[in-house]
Image (cartoon, one colour):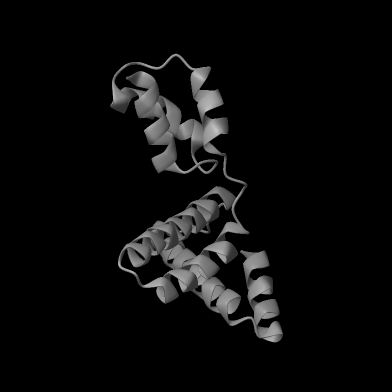
Length: 138
């Protein structure tokens, strides 16, 4: 979180409104999580919060695009770019497929996801992983 505060100050000095506002929202979300858990957040917990915030932006982009609110979608895309800078590089669909092919998964989707989800947590979009797992076990 130390870097986030420094990045916020940098964004304020540079007049980067999108980055400034996004980092303020992120720091607020992290603070709420810290209060909720009643302890300082670990690096992994910080990444989870950032991933949740990024997922919210992706969902908003999808909704705004479907409803032809492109100006709102563009704002969410700009925020998403800021958030993704703090996340580890996400795996592509092809990379996920290669990893899943190496696994011997049960035919039950729920059981398969119990095995796969922890492996890809934070490294890949859960929705994409679920789609690939569903195709493999059919």
